[in-house]
Length: 138
Length: 138
DNA sequence: CTGCTTTTGAGTATCATTATCAATAAGCGC
DNA sequence: GCGCTTATTGATAATGATACTCAAAAGCAG
Ligand SMILES: [Mn+2]
Ligand SMILES: [Mn+2]
Ligand SMILES: [Zn+2]
Ligand SMILES: [Zn+2]
Image (tube, rainbow over all chains, first blue to last red; front, side):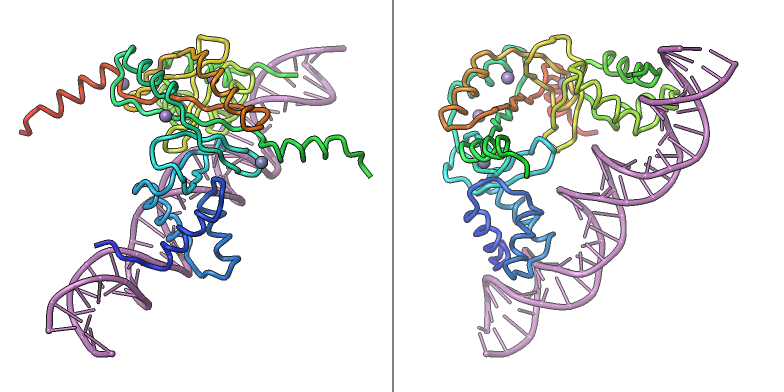
């Protein structure tokens, strides 16, 4: 049977209290910095579990690192992610769902899944970027 | 200046003669098996160059490995990929382009890029799958 | 051809992720 | 509460992809 441990709960909470996507590594570092003695392997396992149970969403960063997030929307959805700060907006996209399904079957493909993510700079990071770009060097 | 070497050409050819997405590792293994003494680091460098020059497309496999392909379409496009054999179909998706752009700006995001890939089983692999599933064990 | 400079590649380093496995601790019946 | 069974943990090692190092090799302008 599946047992309840403070470790799993700690990972769940850390994910929930974070509003953007995070990597297993950074989540582990964060927990440690807050005094938790949780092990790295356990964080990886907990995240994999949460993801397989549908409690967390995961995606590959453009650099290839796996990122996780506790999403509020329960059904299938996609994400708009700030590539600087990780801030994430959940987005529904019925049109895209249908498009993906149609395009696959039109070419004889079955069992189609899709990866649809939008990466950009959130409003805050856009402002910061502009400020630092126009700021004169010392 | 950029020099021409048989290594870069070998990678370009290997990519072109392959109709699906391939990883740097498997491309290197393939070249070696055909007698080429090309080095692994060179394959990585050549693929990175081809990708940055727009001669190759790249994406992250669901497992996080970088895959490359020499695409016939020159402009921006997406892919329908067989997760078993790698066979790839290039697909245009104007609707999705506009959707991505709109969704980003609606939320104040700037400099938006998107990742849109469809993975499935091509017709051939679907048939093979069905055959092996119904085939009685010895 | 010569000389300068880029490119190569074997080896090493890095970094994320997974596997090991002995020690620990849930949850169960009592 | 008390053991007992067994899932879970975590330090550590293993794996695997990718990047770096640097001396040797090879383009190419003159
Ligand atoms: Mn979708
Ligand atoms: Mn697009
Ligand atoms: Zn941001
Ligand atoms: Zn196939």
